[in-house]
Length: 187
Length: 121
Image 1: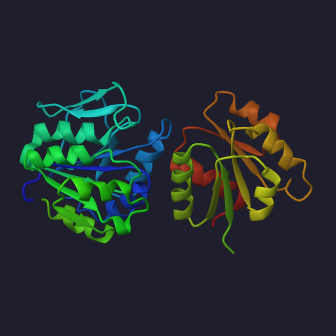
Image 2 (image 1 turned 180 degrees about the vertical axis):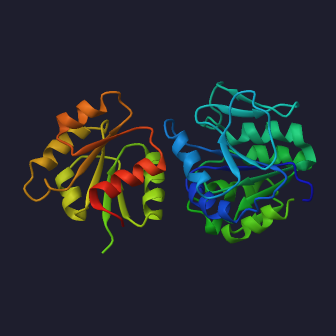
Image 3 (image 1 turned 60 degrees about the vertical axis):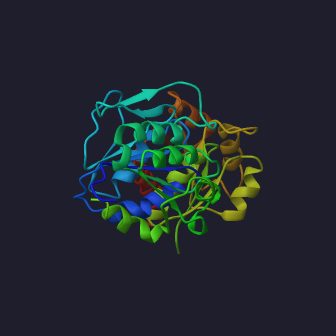
């Protein structure tokens, strides 16, 4: 996709390792927004931000309620809240029930972003052990956004990307080595 | 030889993050979500340094640390007690740990405390 406005990367078990490999190779001059939604327990948010920041010179920050969404920024969904995007290009954090046993739920963010960015949205689903994110990818496709999944043969836990490929008619299946070039070409 | 760090914590995210950070810094890492059979676990790996969480299922961090510190072959391995509890300093002292680290911490603090006990990787 050209003229992408937002890339959302979702993942669960085994996804952090992928992010640490891919982030350093992402072009610092990207003109879109990157949003990362990974399942994790509470308590280590700052360390996660710190770790991801150490791998890129692009600004990395944890999302704050009502914050304006800016390009050339990597936003991390805080633990224990669903992350939604609003039409006025701000974030909102929501403490409603878990979806797919998860909060943040990747489905919730993908679906909410699909309504905002429609065909200017790209969503990538990484390694993980449940199917959170798959329904979101189906919604993204229905709004003519682009979908991608980690090649399950390269995933520490292949269930999540395998379900995506099986059920969501994924546009691109990417090995870890292919991800950065794919992301840089979204500019 | 690569210096070895053994981390005990029941939070898998903490284990994953600390492993990624300290492996990046050049240390060898092993993790465990339980402090049961602590002497067997530690003897089998013989780390240069141990991180011990306060709240661990069954045998807690205090008891596990006390067990290590009363074992003739393991008592000299430094134990860093880590917890989000406000009383981490008192808990570490009660356990007989060599040092403590308050959660949450940043990468630099984690690397520095490791380096201060066992030197660079």
